Length: 156
Image 1 (cartoon, rainbow, N blue to C red):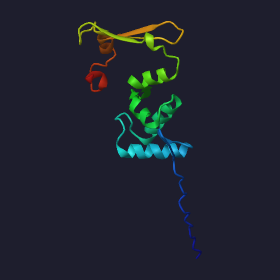
Image 2: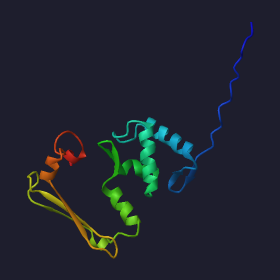
Image 3: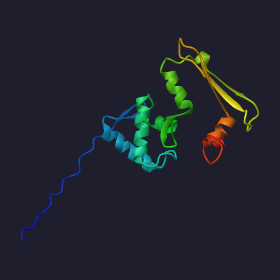
Image 4: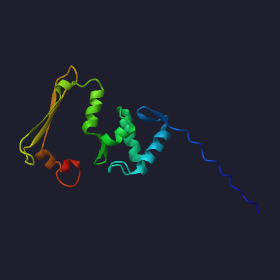
């Protein structure tokens, strides 16, 4: 009878990830994947990230718009299955682009909180462009189903 012996390979040596003054930087996809697994396993990720793959996708999305890995996890929210920049992260990316005219930026609130006509408005402008104002009301939020259930849109 012939005996087959499987040779066991030594595990591949992992190279250290590069560090800079702004934290970790990735040289390849394996570095990003290792980071994503470590961060996910740390349990220091927002609730919307359900796997290392989610962390990896959010970090990659953040890198594409100029955010560091940890800033990506803090400023990208998963809303109904879609990663989206939100809050100060979105403003920071716009300001860092050099195209944002801060002198035109304005946020206003009108009406009584919790009533259908309570509105928030935001005005933004690209340098050399025309200001654009968008308004969203409590009535709009109710119609979109954002005033029920749990989540930051309800809590805040």
